Length: 636
Image: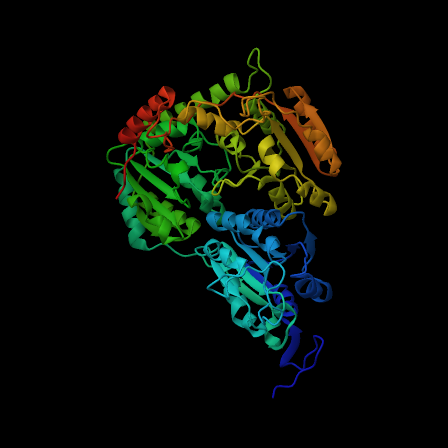
């Protein structure tokens, strides 16, 4: 029999610990490394304690968690969003763990799990589970499945996780945790990792091998492109007359900013950015078209519609980027896709280059230069002219006051652009703000942007401010959020005060879910159920007076300093005062309800009702079918 000592001491062979204690000790000695840069893989943990984890994980953190700081949060979904934002701000090289109690505490994390996996951002979830021993009978908050006694509510995490395991015996950590770390640090497989922790097993002890708690380095390799694929890509580029680059989030995660700038300027290729790719071009250039796709700029929409070669870098090519496969109208358009994931690289019938973006761009730049590929001056000027026309409209139309109206959302973004400094980051996720930021935000010269739009998750924004601030101690963190989204999840303002994680929240008050109302008007033709209106007396519909909400007073009750602003000068002054404040600030900006930026010219497949007796909806369906048949295509 192997000898051991108890209470965390060991003779060099084993260490007797509870399962939860072993988990906490293990997480504190995991590191990631890329390009010889070493960092803690999981430097902290978020959590809310309940009976399912307070005596297990909670006890372990108290006794052994000196290097795993605990952050108390207000909502379990929020803490997953915070962990995801922290991981994203750290380019997926570091993340946070989240612990929740059995039952609703754990299932509250499901939306966060889906958000992280859809966006392919690593988070480690530690939901508590039922008693594995079953001595107790059904325990509080346990699901009793009629035909599967081993099913719990935590099984709902399975389709939302890139790796899932349930620890029914304490020694199972020995295989579960290394696999969890592998998935968290794998650029292809990463996403939500869920380790389900039965309440009783958290407190069960085991003689763990002492070496299990030695420091472990998880090296993140850069996959090199195959030379044949590079040669094929050069031939496509040589033949192209109108090439276009789509810069996705993979540019950021690969730290390929310099290489992207080089390929754009060396070969005269216009570039548009996805939501996650926004800011991939760090130094301004006449070939930067801004956001691309459904919510992109008209300049990007025009150039993408005529491109004969599209080079997609680190993007999943979702419907917002491709216009539901309608954005690329050249009859002979071809695609090159650079992606670490083969699943993504083969989309759109592309020439797949399954490799790291930075290494691929370096190889492609060298090979294209050797092949003598040169920019087409006329094409460069065409792209630059489209960009200039858009920027002229922005400054002379959309940033200006419309007579008879109050301040617009685009004016708010214009002021935020003016006031932003190098090192500041703006955050958005759902509703109208991300679309308008996609068009308007200037992410060059160090002005950062953090948008979650893979899941378009309302309620992500303020929790994300915590994660970004933890990753970014310097500069301002500005959260831009609509009033509808704010109402869903404002309470992490308290956490920001508790942990001294200062952010400035700008609430756009337009009295409803106005961007969805805009879509509703475009596809239904009638306004229904999207504005914050009282129920009309006698009519049983929400079409009465607008419901007044004092957002500033709400935020002030949680300890924020607040402002109400109604014009650009007031907003500018409030932002300057907020920058000097040490704690979290909330600025409520009253904006025009139904003022929108122009579309990008890129179609989006949202179907109007196929059968209707409403003549307005009927006409919208006819127009939808016409656009669908004219624009949408498949690529092989």
